[in-house]
Image 1 (cartoon, rainbow, N blue to C red):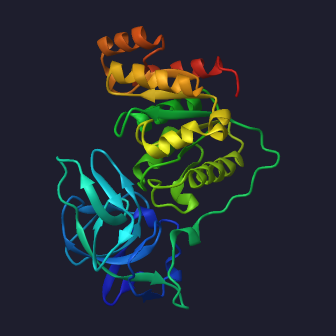
Image 2: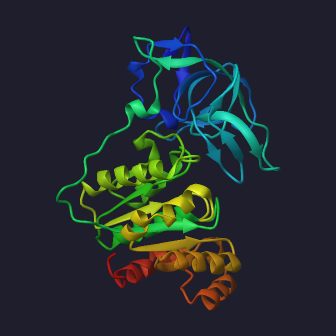
Image 3: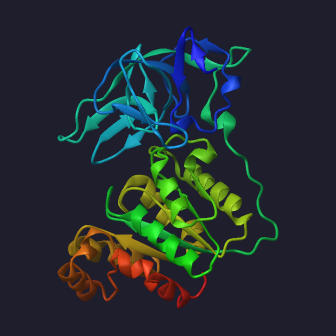
Length: 343
């Protein structure tokens, strides 16, 4: 369904896999905590989110009384909102530009109040059964004969530490070296910007957790996170890349990130990691924690590497190279990876 009454419906990135023709009617709104539930909302008051991101990444301006499809999802964003994937009554909040919605639990003190929406109903099919994001997930078969690519994780100290930028620079340098590389964002909140950057850097294929039916990964259990990891890995291995570059959102002490990193399946399948951070002290503690977990840390990066003084501090503290973007794009990480034995 593209319109409701005489109004056009806006579809944000979190819904990019949804077959819009499956939406033929509205079911009543019910009180629920249900990540992935799809609701039709009407904008009541414009706050933090003045636009949404379309399925192709274009900004869609929001106006009062606009209709859009939102996906209930938890949000964990230290710089923005903590949100819950709940529907309690007729009103809710937009939690992210990708169309993840729910209720704001807390917010950064510098963040504006959230955009408020009125829930008009649950998206439903011909038989009245409510639709869910996982109804449209892209199931993947386990590769039987594809060779195992090397896996490199781009990790960091926190939100906005430089993880995606480092991952994109690594993808670019691998592709420039003539290697086949695919990429993924394993955890986070639905947003087209990061996968687009990885595609633009030269990744042959890029997936994120939305392909496994999740609008966000905050609140996921260990089993759910591992299922996302497996499904994305199986799908990307079908293209037989030489390398897989994965970004894991937020910092390494965040709940879901830490659960993944501490799991033997993940640790045993990862060949090396990079660590992005804003300062030298964060690099020292982060590298030390990752080494304790059993990971091979290739290098540090992020805002700290913008300063020669910062790089010198990090290298003295960690005995690892601290690489700025120009160095990574010049192939410094490719050389470091080639010296690491496959896991």
